[in-house]
Image (cartoon, rainbow, N blue to C red; front, side, top):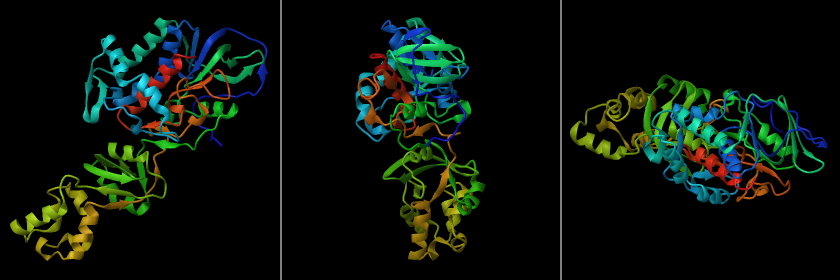
Length: 413
């Protein structure tokens, strides 16, 4: 059962309609990254194409991506960078419309871009340049865009095809593409529309949860680490059989930063995170050097050379804060090892869809063709983008999935 969330306001109908108004070849619901690419490709093939969105602005999430710079793809795109119930599903689309294809589109449009860490690619100017490029491609190809549209019902017509009743009129089409996104970033209008359409037509939806999202801590750990809010350190974090190394940020409620967003895709409630706060050097090496050079120095002073002072103090139990290096015994060393290299924390949850960058889970891939994105049981019905059970890593992977899935569906709708 899907909970009521802000976003699309709909009343989905199971009826079959017989009247037709304003026929199109293709109706795409959702003018985000995948929907705009799909619209441009469908219209380029001379398919009359209507693109509908409930928001006042197309590609709202594109504008927010990468802090307004749009992390539009990554040099290192592979199926292994995605999580889904069918790990092979995304291979076809990613190989047919690659990161190089989108880079080529930017180059053709004269949009400057730059590489950052881990192969992440951003617009040198602003995300608005990419938004405008997507809109121009769709409009130039002949697609019609309507924003601020409230959809009241969606159904199949008795003579075939689909009827979409909206606040701007009734529209019919042979092909219906659902590109309405997921639940993430609910403050900009995300909602459960796509999942409800799937359920209406009997298409399974896998369990949903926030992805690429900050984690919150239980009361005791929150009290311990909340005073560190704003401190960021290079760390390796492990959970769910995966490990990532990037910056970790302490917050008032828990943990954030790129490494936490990455591992959140693999973390499940009740599981622990294992954090290595000094991935570049071992504590053993540090202590051996200190024993020979400054054996009388205090442990807290030593740790403060390698970690922020407040973090070092929070990691140490009271019995070790005033101990000298030379007075440490094997049990003390084990406590220090666990605190620095194997800090174990059990989050109590996430910050939720409001801050999540993606939605984990979605429309079941077993119900779709990986080549066309058409559902197997409802001819003419397609799903693309975030609404599907495909979740990418942080770093441009999710936008690349939007480009790839939208382009591939656009060849067939």
